[in-house]
Amino acid sequence: MALRRGSATLWRTCSPLLPGLRLPLPGVVCPHSTAAGDLVARTSLSRPPWREIVPEPEEEQRRRHAALVSRVNQQIERQGFGRLFAVVHVAGRQWKITDEDLVLIENHIDAECGDRIRLEKVLLVGAEDFTLLGRPLLEKELVRVEATVIEKTESWPKVHMQFRKRHRFQRKRTIIQPQTVLRINCIELAPRLT
Image (cartoon, rainbow, N blue to C red):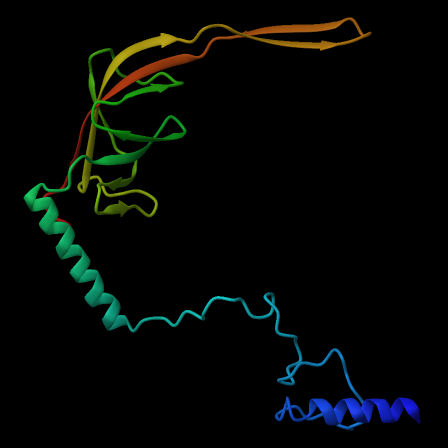
């Protein structure tokens, strides 16, 4: 009886603070229920703290895209974008490059020293105010990255030693990796984006 009176007192003291809260019986208090009566408690896992993203209408997206492309085209026409940088894929690795960079590639390229080559796998090109991303690559007509083969050589010998104690096991391998040094000559953009 005393327990029931205590819960009823608790109900009477809390009910003016929470007018929307209704429990089935005034003597029963459920500590795990939520104020809104949801099945899942409101936590950061059930409802993330950021706002829900409402997708834009398709017409609004087209209008914003056309405005952005025209602004980038104006910069390209004026040549007012400054120094360009690019991310290219060469010999299984990605390199961030700009004009007059030297790139050491751990592979041989089918070109002789002094030959100019064109790097066609360009992932992105950017400047100070804009960046053009490829999905996954940019078109060959959109960007042109040229490089010169400076040197073809081999790396220093690297010793790879394996040893197991108390088993009379030793294995020694010398690894010499072919290398190619490239100098980036120019990064050029197409005169107009589409």
